[in-house]
Length: 99
Length: 166
Image (cartoon, rainbow over all chains, first blue to last red; front, top):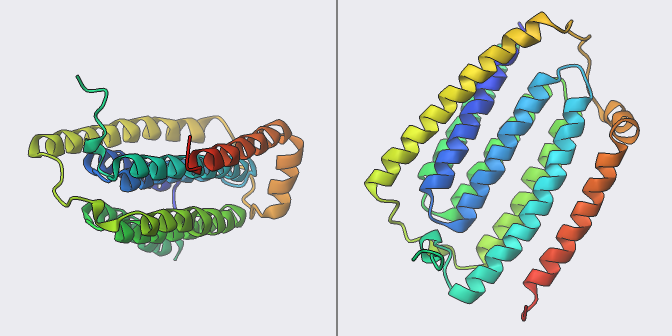
């Protein structure tokens, strides 16, 4: 018995929503970053589910993963620099722009 | 059988994500995200895409999460101050998450009818490294080169940012 595509898409939507909730609720910069990675993964699941039996989905997943790896490298370097300057990872502490 | 496997792995995935949301320690968050990504790789295998499953394990659960764990161990793991957001913020975030899920569900249920109507279902087959490689180096050659340049730039940027004096 095969699984309908809509179930995979529902799981993908649920993961994306949970990732966005985590991005808003968490205060640790690293954990917020992990939530962004989770949202990228949810989009990847939707790509693979939509392209059953075709290679395009896997190609796009490959490209998204390469972009995510680049993003993780630069983002984690930024987190390290921020921690070095402020000695904190709490996103509430970065409010220089707030009047 | 396939449906039971889908249920098992999606349950593991959602449980790991919920554990990540309610966890205070960032190391445990990273480890539960690894569990979530591994179960997503199993779902890719169910969707007949073994290449996507392999790179999910190697790149995400391997490289990216190891990078995260290194940074967590390098910095102070106790810096998460335990106290969450104020209650009003929690309520707002939950409402926003539920409404986002509802909007996505409506949109995707419409795209389901689009999928069924227009295109004939292609012959299902495993999408391994051969098919992906052919597509990657014929139709998607320019995006591949662009991604290569992007990764080179990201490497340079990370090295530049991590230097002592900016």
